Image (cartoon, rainbow over all chains, first blue to last red; front, side):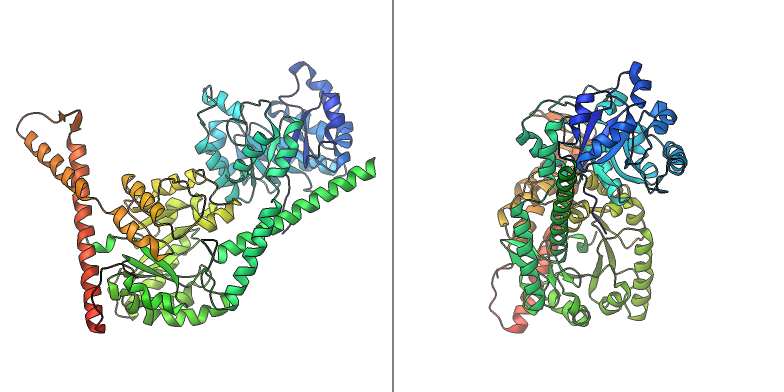
Length: 306
Length: 321
């Protein structure tokens, strides 16, 4: 089965012409054109008119292009967002399977009307309320279009009525539930570790890399990047390092020798290598290859465009 | 309470590695887990199955209980080969649904009847090693009365399922552990869990860390251990057993609580420490657990003594290699 490599997903407010024009140069695996929180209320109508052209602009560097719609303006926003070149829709503030079904119904109609393959459009869901986190299982299994799901930690704080303190992570349970339920449903959980999801501070690339690595080690598969400076460290954090690749090749060799010698449990550097360790080594090596492929395709797209 | 509930230490070993199996009784374990699963190469599965019946009495010679870990995908063939007198538990890996557990129960029930084993003897250990298993925790844990212990949610399989590296130095499994513990507590089961103790080496033979982990786990109300290397057996036995000071303190608490009877008071503070019925209950629990551990240790010592006598080996301390 092909591995979905969507390490970085760069948010670009649709009305920010500079950001939209530059977005394809940032090496993000995906770019999400934002009609929601990045656009002021009075510009919502104007913003919709910009989507079709922005899809082509954003996709020049080989990134997948998504559009984040407003939950409260779903019908008009979807109508403005489904054009050839768009990979899918980011649906915020989801609280029920019925809301997913409603979006899917309209997406299906628009696919037909606008000449997209039936079922081509994916969905990325954002949960932003206690209700959404609690009912996550029914929500993320509501459609096979759903490929990723994350928490919007700022809006979740609002819903919970809390003012989060940077030194105290209030989302241990919510994030854990997201990872377990999404993994069980074969949907990718996305997010970064606290407090970066709430306090979008300017941090060094090294700090972002560390927090994205921690997120990967909680089970996250990618990060929504509010700023282009996040993209490079996030991509690096979700790509197996050369050391990791070398180590896992060694694991596979040592394990294969052990099996040939009649056991599937063999010590290596003080650890025990058995079937799940060898299975994990296969995953890491396949992931490294998939990341290489993804990066090569982006390079090729940029070369063709320049 | 019977001492078969004392599972402080245990070694999981490939049943195909004869030197591990032959020496298992010398290790001082509360249980030995004979593995048919992840430590046995695919091409040796049938051979491994054929070894279990004779290995059961061999690993019990030191008083340990005999468990077997079967393969998730070979339930019928594995159970048919392992459910024999002397087996205490079937460990079932990567449990994901209640139906799987009910099937195990049906097959084990039939085999117990056919092979002259007292009904209900063989326990089921449902190992939760995937996100799907965590999401179905309560259904799985309540699927059979043969499940007496429940937990997991960490380890190599879980990490692979979540796509995470292990030994990164922070708590990665808090939610899953919490869900499993809650399900176990609600159902009155022993909890297989441990508080987070940073481990960045992944070593399976670190005796000092094994002791610290066992002590920390016991303080959190967990009593179940187990490992892969003989070096961790003694530290686990020690770390999960109340110390002499703790036993003495528990007796002191009960004595002070008894003195309250008839005074009309429900609690008393002595040197800033509150003695009430909750503290008394905790003290009673400590004494009961200490007594079970002591009884279990006597059983194991006696078994080792008998085995050495039969082999005409000189007596040495339990747990020596």
